[in-house]
Length: 168
Image (cartoon, rainbow, N blue to C red; front, side, top):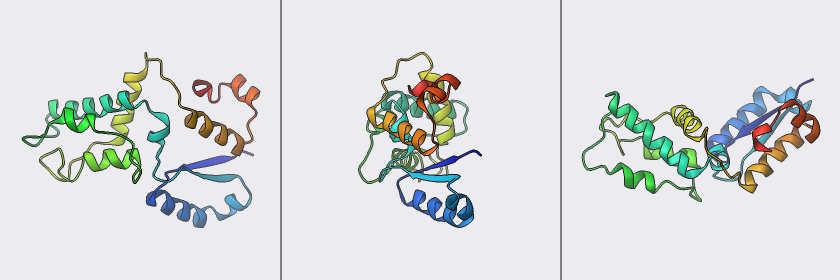
């Protein structure tokens, strides 16, 4: 049978999902067909699998697209370049949460309910990174190795089938 790894953030949101999965998927967890891998404290997948400079550019371009389409309006006196330049991993919150906080609560846009979709950022990131050579950090390769181990994948077989091809 198939095995599944639930990869969850290392924050309060991840803890809640882990708890909920424990209730809803009790049998699968007991049977070890579902394994939960919680990322390090205050880390999200963005911390592991993004080139920070391309990520910043993706955030900036998504915001610019939203403004150009008149879907969002930037507040007066907001210097987007400075805000984007200051995006970095923080010790007390995930990179995903950092972006969420930056782009919501009226920090950038005139409407405090407006924010930027992380899905839009990831799609833009994918487009921007297509033709770039990205150095994969050791913590990313370690994460992929841990997932392979939890799924009982053999390196040769997964390479042959194309599983994890881009990470290897």
